Every structure is written in C-alpha cells, then in structure tokens.
Picture 1 (cartoon, helix red, strand yellow):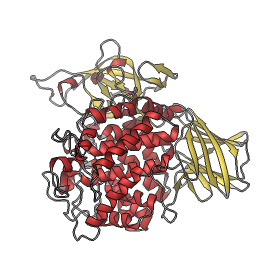
Picture 2 (cartoon, rainbow, N blue to C red):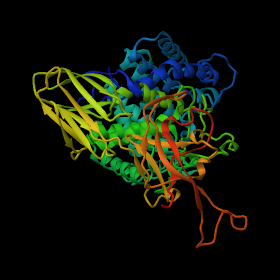
Picture 3 (cartoon, rainbow, N blue to C red):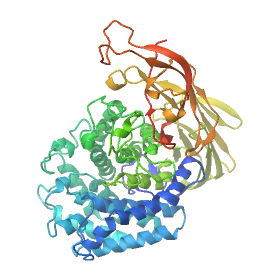
Picture 4 (cartoon, rainbow, N blue to C red):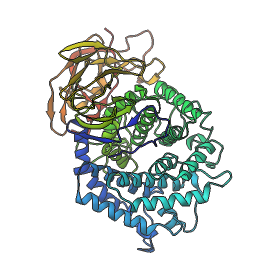
Length: 639
C-alpha cells in the first residue's frame, strides 16, 4: 500500500515513507475525517462534476454533444483528476462500489476525450480546437496534465489500475515529444506538472519524464511563461529557482513549484535545488505564515504579501495553498529527516487546513480568515465563506485528496529506525532491521498528549523507535519499563529508543498540553497588542455564538495574567468531540472624537468594563453552528 510520494531506490532521501508494509488508521480525528470524506464529500464531488459541467466538457472534447458549449474556467479537467486521486486513495481503506464505478466512468471519459497523439485538455479542444500551448500563461494545459498524472499514479498504486495510467503516459509522451528537445520551451503559468512528472517517472521508470521535469524547473524564471497583467512574480517566473530568496506571487503556484524542486533534488541529488528550497521555506515560516499555517496574505491575485504582512481579517490563506504546503513540507522531511517540516505539517493540518471543510463534509472555504466581523454578510461573493462547490473548484478536491491519503504522512523509516511523525490511532506494519515490525499506536491526540506504542511483532535485532517532540511541548516524558524520564528534542527534533524490542513491549510519550497565550512578532503590524490561545497542536478562536448577554466578540480583550482553563471533553451538536478553553476577558469601549474613531493623545483611548469569562473553541471547528463573528487574535487588555 503506497501513498502519493514514493522515492526511487536510488533517491537521495534521508527518510522514506512506509512502503513495505501498511499504515491503517484505527480511530481518532484523522479516521473521522476520512469517514466523512468517504460517506459525504466524495459522493457530493461526484455529483458536482456532472452539475458543474466538468464531465460534459470532456464529452464535447470526445465529439459528443457538439455545440453544447464549454462550461466553467480553463482548469475544469483538474477537478476531475483530483477527485479521481481522492477516490483511488479512498479505495485503500476498503472496497466501495460507487467509488470504483466513478473511477471507471471518469477514466472512460478521459480515454474518449484524449486525442490520438495524447493531447488532452477539454477547454482547448472545445473552445479553440487545434490551438495548443499558445497561451500557457493562463491556459493551465500542463497544470491539468499534472493532476491527471498524479491521479493515474494513485489509481495504479491503490488498485493496480492500468487504464488511467495509460492515458497519463500517452499525455506525458506527448509532452516529451513537444518540449523535451525544444529550445526555450513555453512554460505553464501554473506550476504543477513538474512534481507530477517526477512521480510518474517513479511509478513507470521512464527517464524522459524526469528529464522533462528538470528542463521545466531549470527554465523557470527566464520569462518563458509570457507576459501577464500581474507580472512575472505572480506566475513564478521572475527569478531562476536556484536564485530566488523568497516565495513571491501566487501562493499555490509557488508552493507546487517547490514540491517539484524538492522532488527533483531527491531523484537527481542536485544540492543547489535543495538548498534554495530550504532557504525559501525558512523565510516563509519566519515571516509569511499565519498562526494557523495559512499562506497567501492577499485575496487579490491570491499572492504572498510582503514580509510580516499577515492580516487576520483580510488574509486569504487559500485551502489549496495549505494543501500544497503540506505536500512541500512532506518532501522536505523525506529529503532531510528534520522534524521541523513535520512540525509545520502538524500546525497546518490541524488548523488552517482542517478548518476549510465543514464538520459534516458538505461545504468548503476557499479562503480561511482568522477574523470575521459581525457585518461580514455585506461582502457578497466573498470566497472566505463555505460553499459546496465553486466556479473555480480547486479547493474541495485539493482538501479531500490530502485527507484520503493522511495515513501515508504518519511515519517514516531511516536505516534501522522508525520515526513516528504524526500522532493518530494506528496499526502499522513495516520492514525494518531485516525483519517485520508490527505496532499499535493509541492516543487521544489532539485532545490528549499521551501517545502509547505497543509492539506486537518485532525482528530479532535491535532497532530504533523515534518520536517527534513538537516545539510547543515545554516538557515531555518518556515512559517505558514502569518508569518515566523527562526527554528533550535532539538536533533533528526527536527522541529515540533503540533496543531489541519484543512482542508486548510498550513505550509512551507524554506531551505537555498546558494551554498557552501566544503573541505575534512585533513586525506584524496588523497584530500588535494582540494575543491568541493555543493548546497542543491546536489554535483556538472565539465565536460570537459562545458569548452570552449580547457581548460583542470584537469588543472583548484578554486579560494577560489570567488562567486559561481547559474544560472537559464534550460533544457539541454540529461539531462533535472537542475541548474548549475558558479565559478571563473584559469589554473594551471608547468614545469617538469629533465623530471619528480616533482620540487625541494622551487620552484614555478606551475604558474596560464588565470582566467576564469567554470560551474559546478550536479554530478548525468554527463556523459549524450558524453564521457569525469570530476572532483568533484578541486585544490584550492593560492590567
């Protein structure tokens, strides 16, 4: 059972995914998300591909329904591919007739629409027949091809499907014939095909796919995408990938590009690619990442903003960008073995990413704000509101394809050590130390910080079991053989137990889940004087629905010295299992001067009244109980 990323045997990988064995979720939040995907989100996606016109576009490209008219944006084929990828990975969890039928039906449509030379892009085929590769700055032709390649690899690895893989290979062979020997080839304005070509190479062994991916990466930044109204930065074509110091432009494009850069490093050993990508990742984390892991601070053009430009209310934090961030960090983790990449995956996954879908699996955000005011309903068409589907529906299937393959991000292997990177109830089997290890992971994460591993089968040699210690845990205890000791992160972020394990052995990691008050870097202008609440891997928020007595969430301020009190686990209708946090707050009010919301200094700019208790909820669970105001970052009141 293999996941989305399987480096070759000769890849320059410090860690490898669990590929010789099986990882199966047995409970907890991750398994719940997968169940919601299987029961609700996937059937909904199947229906929307018909309602939105994706399938009709392919039928027209195949010569059916002539004159019906193309529907939707240029990248409609990519939605089909991402739903196919989700469906393929979902079938790893067990048979399902409707999902298998969808894969067969969608594959047949793609086969019928594909032209004899392998070309496949329904928008170009229907709207501009015979006109190919002429406006790659916005046509998404290669972008759609990339998602098709990834879907085909997923179906091949999950259910042994050869039909969709054959469609992908014909299209990839067409790309090779068109562009591999071409000097100064035009490049797609939306990177994605690069990482997909590398994975198709891994699945098929066809070296030309890897060579073409390298050509596309090496040529990026030389103006070959073509002019665009938002400039070369928006289309990630302003500097060569080995020279660009920061991520700029369209967030999703930039992050997909980075995934391809690291994939190329893994398969070629080109250190300059890895070094450049790590540099940009470090800058992104330090100055361009929201507390929730969200990326892309500007809704207009969906771009990264300037350093420390992280507004809570207008930050876009697109769902696709957060999915792409997980994909990039996972590749960097495999390349380096450094836990900081798993740390960011955890932050992003449990917060900004998980918030994108409603608890019932029916609605999605495109943008994920950290603040919403009471009068937000006036902003008609704002993409920071959940909906079942979108005109440009990239985000719903981007979400589900990550969730469907979550277990593949849980552990890695390096030498004779198994590294547990993320914590969820799991049954895991892998080859290690010349034999087979079978483990059970039991945990209440993210509500509880205890992770217990029981060994059910072990090889007769010594081998290591490593736990990632998240940086938010100020104290960690490791318990084994009836005693516990305090442990710290090693230089890579782990604590490792190396021994000859026997069936029945257990070891437990206890992480400190004390809630904490987090303040922003002083250069984040939009957040000065504010604080947020975190507990374990979760960021918390205050929703209007939880405030009694007509108190306005936007009028509250946190008392910095107050105790943060954790409530008991509970089930909330519309949300499910959760843990809330109580905090002491005051109401902040101030008079206007001359009708303006300003006061002459020095003056009492505000008065505080009505000390009360407010209850915070995990951010990923917000907006499931009706439409209302919300804040992650709260003003800090003067003591």
